[in-house]
Image 1: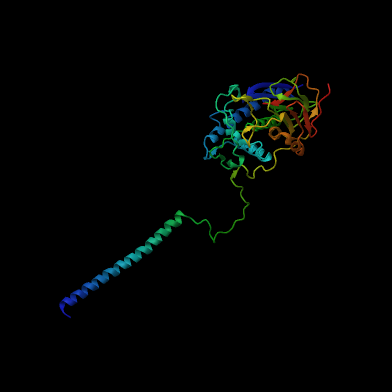
Image 2: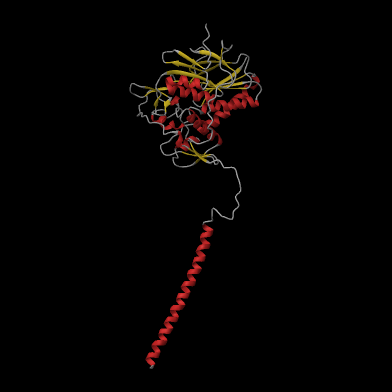
Length: 101
Length: 306
């Protein structure tokens, strides 16, 4: 092996060593970035369900938003009077008048 | 012997009767407070009302008061109970038909363009009961004219009965609510076409001791559209046109004034079908045809023979 051959080999080994270092940095960086993104996402989007959460039995909440055909006041608002109107000769001094308006 | 006070309010006549004269002033104050509150919440003719804010903010949630919410729930319940014959989304239909301001300010002959559009339907109204807030889609305008007046009569009569001695009768433009003990022989009421008519107007005198009584009529609140037609204020929500004139005047007694008002208004819209409907609900009612012939259902008393 002459001197020129020996110089080429050491340059090749040095380049391979640099490439190996870069690869390790990239791999390490990727792991670190994945961890950071995971932590950020965990804070930004908290889980709505967790298998570790205990189920607390509660009464079903009434929906806050309803449309006009919703469930509230489903009972008919039209009920008859306790006593039907009776015939009357009128009151002295008049009385109330019920007519269209 | 009863005492009474009468004045103009919310485009109609307000009247309160009491059995104890000493309570008249306080009864009037209670009714005035209720009228002021409902006008600010539900008037279609005030720019600063909650109703106006809802109607001018389509697609947006509008925060409303508990009173507005009660009036809206009452109106929606009326729509459900009548399958839409009394529908609070009739606001735009009333406006484009020419009833776009307080009736006293309407010209006798409407010169602007009159149109008829169906009510979009009460199911489109969205209510957030917790905020509370209301949202209507574009094209939907609310009007509580059919039920808000009756609601005020009920609320005022209840509060008077709760806080005052003796009995009270509240009359808002012919929508009556009774609270507390009635005078001997009951409260005398003349049912007729026009609430502004005197006690001697053609009609019938009856007495009530509890609940509510309301009368709807196509003989009042009429206007001319500039052609050959005269219009009246009770629209059929399905068409947006004034309801076909089958009954001239319908009076109904019920457990409260809201119920009576819903039934009398729906009866005008339903025409002949109103008779079996009122009977099925056991609502005493007096229905006067266009020819003056009177029909009665559910133990409405016969006319006294003179």
